[in-house]
Image (cartoon, rainbow, N blue to C red; front, side, top):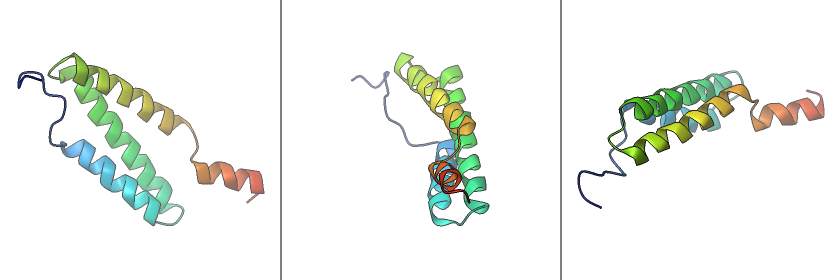
Length: 90
């Protein structure tokens, strides 16, 4: 691929925050885990919207559109542990 059509680039701040908060959500206990998961999903949404609005090519804008769909889906749905707790009755 030519240099004017970048597919991969070093992650920017929102994507770094999303990754770190997502890792923190796996390590932390309940209310902090839920908060870290929310921060991760919101940071992913910010990154995705930046790609949609200012991506350097059609691939990056499509990647942002997919990231937007994933982030909105994750924000709107309960986590696996929340669903499991509801099934058990906790």
